[in-house]
Length: 272
Image (tube, rainbow, N blue to C red; front, side, top):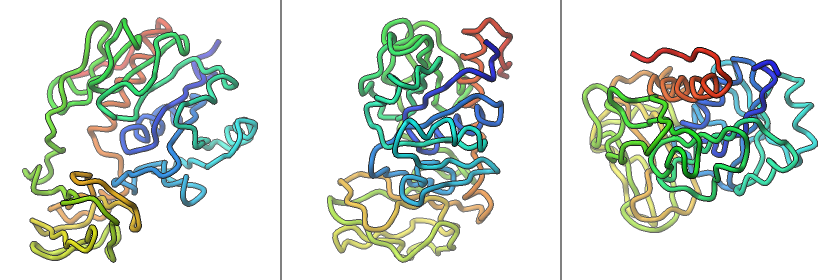
């Protein structure tokens, strides 16, 4: 079988999963995404799971389209698009018979993926053990090992520190102070000033600690739990960055591509 005929099923449709899906789709693999019924992604400008709500989502020239049945997958592929289906348990694998399964849910724990699911199972980040519940793990922590393919053992523990932009990390991120309904009048790409109210949860105002552009923001009207990530402020003020795949996600995608090539005995992508 030619590599471009390989079928890759990706669990998840958030920023990380979308970066991987984009890379594999542009490399002409047959990619399918599975998601939950109400995704809670915040980096929605670069998350294919937005198609669950809007029917389709385009990221850097690649489009994902929501489907309701596995029977629709071949047609979507013929149109050079990525099918995405509400299927939290990834049951579609029984009819799709994928060659590769990538668990990109980023739950920091395994939610049911098994090494016996398909010929090659890849887990992203912590929560998986290569050689036990997946064949390979790809490192997702920032640092010199980002994107590294792990063939035995686990990824590094989650640091809880977001990607640094303009030298800022934790102060860029908005979190829910309590359980409740998330509301906002802001949109991704809007500029906000330090101290400005960006949103509210259960009537509790959420202010930006720094000024910049709203790079990521959860959909309004979602019910969230205390501590849930709600959005990000980009101090560089680049609106383009809101809709561009981050270098970190590209590095992780490189790792997934390398893992696939390693499995099929082709020289993989070289990491620095």
